[in-house]
Amino acid sequence: MAMTALRREGRRFLLSPIPPNPSTAARSTMLSESTAYEMRWFLIVSLGDDLISGEVPKSNIHRKNHGRSRRSFVFVCSFFVNAGDLSLLGIRSISTQVVRNRMKSVKNIQKITKAMKMVAASKLRAVQLRTENSRGLWQPFTALLGDTPSVDVKKNVIVTITSDKGLCGGINSTSVKISKSLYKLTSGPEKETKYVLLGEKGKVQMVRDSKNSIEMTITEVQKNPVNYTQVSVLADDILKNVEYDALRIIFNKFHSVVSFIPTISTILSPEVVERESESGGKLGDLDSYEIEGGETKAEVLQNLAEFQFSCVLYNAVLENACSELGARMSAMDSSSRNAGEMLDRLTLTYNRTRQASITTELIEIISGASALTG
Image (cartoon, rainbow, N blue to C red):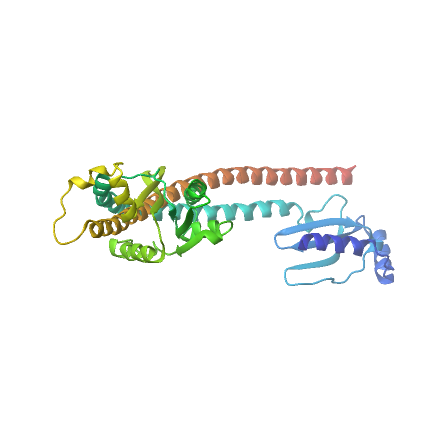
């Protein structure tokens, strides 16, 4: 917008009639009689790295400074140059300078992406080891209580796990899309579905069109290395602040550095577990176990549901963190390669522009020498 305004003001200034300066006209006449050079006037408009120059009639220009501001300025000056010889203005160095600046920027970006890839690779191994160890926590619960994502309940809570930082491909967008699709499936006239969001990126995307359905938001979960104590406190806060019949945890399960699998884990409330067990569903084998101690079956199921949720949430946070680091490695590697390809193209453009400038200058020198000897 600033450049457009400068061009508009420049055109308005050039088209406005300004009386010629007598001293300038006299000097121009004297110079034209004594030399073979001709007087050309150039309006040079500079804004940041851009430089625009154009020859304008002498009668339409009054030499003075105009429109100075913090980042842009317009000034008018005169040069005595040979016809066709514009190298005194440095016009041919403009395009090469722009290309050099862009090459420098691309190199700096490439350094940053390579450094981010190395940082993600150094963190990935430690997180991957803890993720593999955490898988043994939730597997016994799946064998005992099962995982029934198709269960039909009235109160659903969708726990969406995303990252706090970006530059990791489409890992967060995938979780958000699955959450929205699951919300549509579990919604109904007599049903209630709420969101619990872990991670800043999921919060930013969900607030746009699902603000009223968000029950809780938790950020900076991965600011420090994740441990079970930290996640169990988060799980306890979630259970105290939401009412649910089914908790559906959406996360990205780590498969390899370049692959992750969107996963949904379902945790039922004690009431739903007991109801499903009595109806002879997938939880029908629960009655075959004996309960020791003075606790009732409802108390045992309550404790199992809380412990299952904390274990599954702990594994889900680690799986998603591992997937995030792997996706960031892949994204930064692709960015580094793209920066290298762009740098090759800019280098080729720079060499071509510089060679064309040199060739044109040689032609002008030879033409001027021929004109003088002829």
